[in-house]
Length: 96
Image (tube, rainbow, N blue to C red; front, side, top):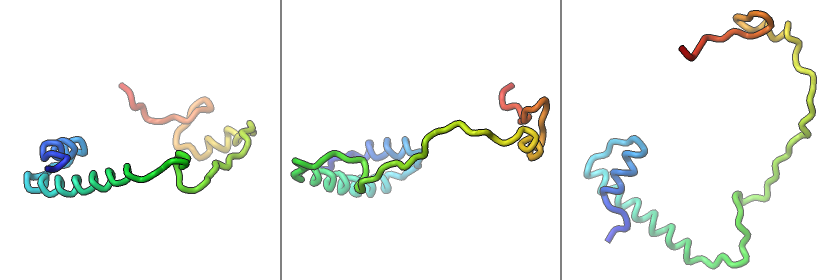
């Protein structure tokens, strides 16, 4: 007996915006069942003493200190803007 039905496969395909045939749903049912079986085997592992982690490597974000700094001069910025008015860059309206 499969752990996932063809209706569930079709539902997942619909969520992913995929159009699949009945034959494809049956094929994917077998493949997804194999994936579920493999995932269930992972539950049999002894993980006592294993710290939860989000990454396999010990990584840390290396960030610089956030210090305020002087930006570009407005004249330099507006020189590259295709359209500007009163010291502001004009962009096309996206709201009516």
